Amino acid sequence: AQTVTQSQPEMSVQEAETVTLSCTYDTSENNYYLFWYKQPPSRQMILVIRQEAYKQQNATENRFSVNFQKAAKSFSLKISDSQLGDTAMYFCASGGSNSGYALNFGKGTSLLVTP
Amino acid sequence: SQTIHQWPATLVQPVGSPLSLECTVEGTSNPNLYWYRQAAGRGLQLLFYSVGIGQISSEVPQNLSASRPQDRQFILSSKKLLLSDSGFYLCAWNAGGWEQYFGPGTRLTVT
Image 1 (cartoon, helix red, strand yellow):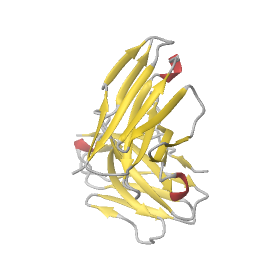
Image 2: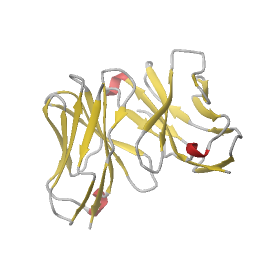
Image 3: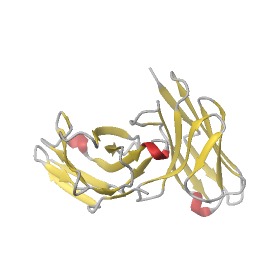
């Protein structure tokens, strides 16, 4: 079984500042991936970043980076130089090969970027 | 390039009525297909997934069912809707790898 926990229902950050969203997970699989998805008001799910669990190096995509602590089962997302367009719901998710690569999602963090 | 379609975009149905939501993928073959539901203020809950035609795995027991009549078509159905079936339904696919690509979703309101 897999569970994903996001303990911050809402967060706020000023434009150009840095914010970190937290996520912890639990999985019984040995081969798994972790993801952060963004859901803007349009409700379209957009992949932000992914992390292969077997890789020690933290993934980075432009202003988005993760802090992956495998032993602690922690997977936080850092957004640098926040922009107004980053305002959205952010979901952490895990997926394993034993369940057809289906994803387990956290309840999400609502991020508001203010001017 | 691959695209995923869902319809209808919005739907209002009375309690006890049937349901049929359709999802189709273009530009790929033999994709893994998924149905998720997002209730108001909550995360996405996996409902069904399929790794091939006629192969459906159910994650949550409920009055919903899924079928995959064609390789790139995934249908979510119900014989009798409940109020608790209201939500935002998302279809997704992947090519047997890890990243999932989501459709635009269907907003279902059961009255």
